[in-house]
Length: 281
Image (cartoon, rainbow, N blue to C red):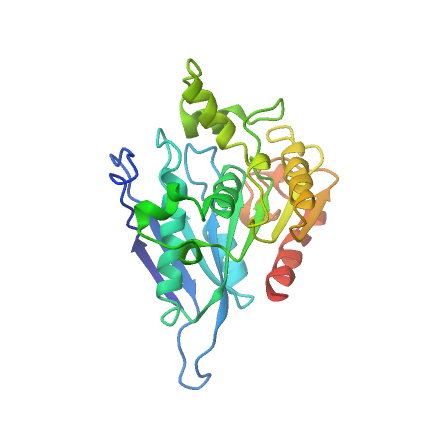
């Protein structure tokens, strides 16, 4: 296995962002090149753990990468900058990570036309942000990149934070992303900008979503609003809404649990559905 930590580079100054404390890394979990097996090309997955844009969760980190890597998907975990790192800091880092993988596809045995992003909770907001801003100057200009350099070929959203402008908003995530200034028109424009159900377009990549109907932290309406927008623009999507389960289930099993409330066997099927979805591309 190619297991290494890569320092991600982003031109924060060019993006007019504060780089203090920014130290994003990308950890690879990829099959080693074997003379016996020959060269292969695997789909790749960049995993964005959740944590309310306040921290990067360990529960949605390495165990998830190993699960997908064990099923023939080159996996990478992005530890992105948060804690008072305003939009689009983390999105710029994710875009840089996708660009890095695409440019180094041969080393990691990656099919550069099958690079997916996966995000949990606030990490879902991050993954969906790249899916809708990859062709905008806000990301391409600081990276001196073309849209195709940073475009995800597909997006997997796990109980995602989506809306920032409705009664279903996970306010903690949005405050960590933007700050608490609501005193002027510019601040309100930024809040509307990151309400991602309003950013879907014909250019948004195919998307896989799952959520639980009784999520009391990030309401399921976040996923439903995004699904409706995908449907409106005829973007292919697959969705699984499970009857019950606490927020932050990750793999829904003992391995990623901090207690019995994270162990929901009925919901574990999201992983096999997601793997099948990736391999259909």
